[in-house]
Length: 295
Length: 296
Image (cartoon, rainbow over all chains, first blue to last red; front, top):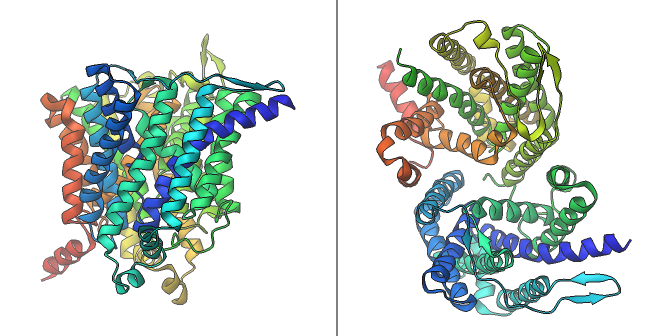
C-alpha cells in the first residue's frame, strides 16, 4: 500500500512536466487546428542552447534557463513561419509533414553542434528531501512540482482573465467568428505559438535540470510524452491536458515499479490505444474538439 | 551490377512498399503514423516461417502479407470510427505497442545446432533462406522490383475499376460519400487491410534481405518518414510515394560528401516543396492535367 502511494507521488512529480508538454501541444492545436509534431524538437533546441551557455561560460541555472527560453522561442518561430504561416490554412497535412521535415533539420543541426552522446546541463539547486510517514519526496521533485504549479497558475490567469486570453479562446472556438470580431487572427496565432514554446521550455528546463544531462533524442521523447498525455486527457481541452499528464506520470510509475521497464512501454501504449477507442473524448470528455475535421 | 547500386536500389524498393502503404491510407483520408507495425509483423512472421519452421520462401512471404492485412483490418475495425488526429495517434499507439511487445517476444528453437528465432530486444538473427538458396543480390533485387510492380499494377487496376475513385470520395468527404451510398466504414477497413498487406509484404522482403531484424528498426521515425514520402511525392498517383522515396534516398547517396548535412538539406527542401505544393509534387491537379493532355 505504501508502495502504491509512493509511486503515485513519484508519478505526479514526473506527470507535472508531461502536463506542461501536453498543454503546449493543446495551445498550438487549439488555435491552429493543426498538429505541430516538431514541438518537442523546438524545446530540444532551447535546452541545448542552455547547455551551450553552461559549458561555454560555465553559467549557472538562471542564465541557462534564459538561453533555453530564447532557443525554444527562436526554433518555434522558425517552425511557425515555415510550416504554418506559409502554408494555406486548409492544408493541415502539409503543415504536419513540413513540421516533421523541420524536426529532422533541428535534430541534425543540434547533433552536429554537440557531437557527444550527452551534454551536461546545470542541475537544480539542492533542496532538502521531505519524509513523512515513510513517504519520500525528493527535493528536485518538489521543485518541479512547485514550478509546474506556478506556470499553471500564470497560464490560467493569462487564458481566463486577460484580453489576450479572450482573443485566444475566441480563435480556438471559431476562426471565422474571431475574424469577424476584428481579432487579428495571425497575430494571436503567432503569439500563442510563442506562449506554447515558453510553456514547453519550462518543462524541458525542469526535466533537463533534474537529469543533469541532455541528448538530441529529447525532441522525440518530448513530442511522444506530450502527444500521449494530450490524447489521454482529451484533445483540445487544457484541463484534459493537465489530467492526462498526471495520469500518464502515475501509470508509468506504477507499471515501472510493479512490472518493470519493458512492460511499462506496453502498458502505456496499450492504455493510449484503449483510451482512444473507448473514450475518444479523453478523461475530460471533450465532445466537439474540431478533431473530426480533416487533419 | 555494381553491388553498391544493387543495395541502394533494393532499399529504395523496400521503402517504397512502406510509402505506398501509408499513401493508400492518405487517399482514404486518414494519416497513419503506424505502418511500420505491419512492416515489422511481416518481417517477423515471414522470418519465423522460413528460418524456424523451414517453410518455403514464397509461403513465408504470403504469410507476412496475409498477417499484415489481417491485423491491419483488425486494428482498423475499431480505429476507423476515429478520424483526424485521433486516428493518427491510435495507429501510432498500436505501432509502439507492437514494437514494445517485440522487445519482450522470445520464440527460439534449435535449428542445426543454433538457437534461431526472435530474442526480444536482441533482435532476430539468421533469416538465411535467401543465402542458403544461393540467390544473388541482383536476383533478389529483381524479385523486389517484380513484386513492387505487381502492387502498382494492382493499384492501377483498382483505379481503372473506379475503386480508387470511391476511396478518394471517402477520403475527401466521408459524410457526402455516405450519402451517395458508399459504405464508408467498410472502405476504410478495406483500405487499412490493403495498406497492412503491402507493408507486410515489404517487411517480409526486408527481413530476408537483411537476415537480421530488431524491434528498434520499426520506430515511429520509420512510420513518419513513410507518410512524409507520400506527401512530398504527391497524393495524385501511386508514383508519388515512389518519387518521395527516390528524392530522399537518392539525395542521401548523391550528397554523400555532405552526408552530415543531409537532413538539413532534405528538411529544408521538403519545407519549400510543401509551401509551393501542399499536396506534393505530383498532386491531383497535375495528374489530371497530364491525363487530359495525354488524351488529346
